[in-house]
Length: 190
Image (tube, rainbow, N blue to C red; front, side):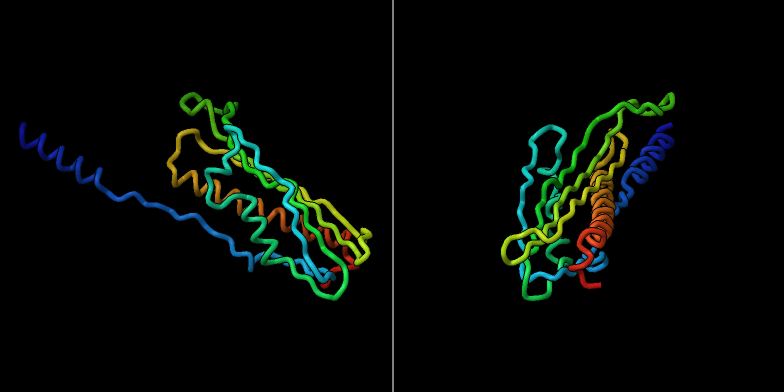
């Protein structure tokens, strides 16, 4: 009997000591995303977004916030050429929220509460001539959301949030390209 128990304990310890596979979050390089080249001699970025402090806003918990991602893309992918006009980018919103919601599709033994993650971007592009007259402008709005189980590991949470942020940025860039081509096309380099 003692031999069976010791064998069982040895196997249990051996199995429980197996390493956990950690998957690192995927990073998107700005070089893989589209660029905007506009006829302007200067670029001005106005940060008009103030993070809302609430239990649902998780920006303070992230190293890579939506605002940092957006600023990085603007810095790396907005190009200007020419010797006239001023291009202004107003960042109005770059937020991410995590909410607990009821899982209305839950089966008998599934969690009744899940986490909903939402990312929202709102940016205004404005092009002024040297005298301060507005030549062209457009607003770009983009949002994306996903869900997860309520109780997941920190690593899984980071992967879900990182994937959501990357996909939200791609959506935002695609919408920016579409809107600037539509409303500022005369001032863009193709």
